[in-house]
Image (cartoon, rainbow, N blue to C red; front, top):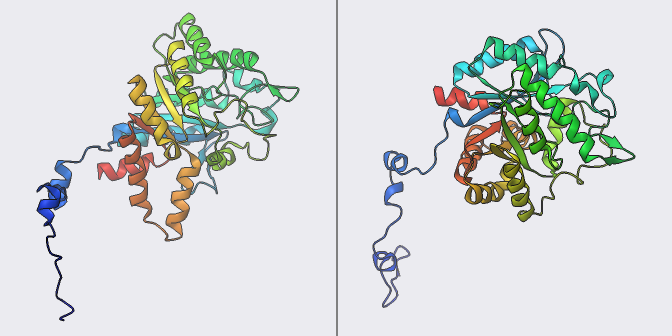
Amino acid sequence: MNRQTRLKPAGARTVDEITGSRRLRRMRKADWSRRLVQENHLTVDDLIWPIFVIDGKNVREPIPAMPGVFRLSVDLAVKEAERAAKLGIPAIATFPNVDMSLRDQTGSHILDPQNIINRTTSAIKAAVPEIGVITDAALDPFTSHGHDGILRDGIIVNDETVEQVTAAAVLQAAAGADIIAPSDMMDGRIGAIRDALDANGFQDVAIMSYATKFASAFYGPYREAIGTQGLLKGDKKTYYLDHANSDEAIREAEQDLAEGADMLMVKPGLPYLDIIRRLKDEFQVPTFAYQVSGEYSMIKAASANGWIDGEKAMLESLLAFKRAGCDGILTYFAPEVAQMLKG
């Protein structure tokens, strides 16, 4: 028998009989038809760019664990904000690397109106008023132990931490922050911050709650970026969420919304797409994801080794957030993606 002969078993159905003539590849046959039926799209309006700031002038300090990401002095942070605005990026989120001489057990330097984060906010808003500035009121960049709260006898004390985080949030709003995004995961922080902002005349300052921040292995490069790597004693499992839990994440988000959060954030991103989907389905409020440092660095490292196409992986990962229900994404890829979308 000719090896090219295709045998058709007796009584076998045709493909049209099997599918009922519903051939789902029809709309995948050409680029134009794939574009026509694409369900989710990534635009520059989806991007928030996290940047790291440090004291000094004309400082652009590379972060080895995050190729292409730098710690920037305030003057260069302003220039990058100007670049972001020209690319159409709606907002920047700022994170400080604080000199060790200014860190202590309680993170008290966060209450200095002239600390690096507040000076950066003021400078950016003066130079680029049209771009949104998002600040984090958590204490970890300011503590000598790397925890997000005040450490007493080996315990992160909730209520005292909330009091300090709340005071810091008011100072950040006074410096010009448009959105306060507290990442400390203390109970009651959202309601306390909302009350304090309103009482001090900052009713228009929004709150993006890190409602579901998980105790994750993907934060390592970030901790290098803000200078807390090696400082942390123990772990953060007493206040971050267990990554095995999704119902608990829903309860956290529900509580934060009841306390006055305007937006929800899921952190990290890609390992928690199911959480994003659940939050969006449950609450129908603006929902964001933070594509954290470990996610960014994995793509960069694999790309540098030639194991994956870095550009395609970057875009695929960001579109996954949109498919899961995100209204926006905090990502270190923001300027690179914005340039591609513009270009």
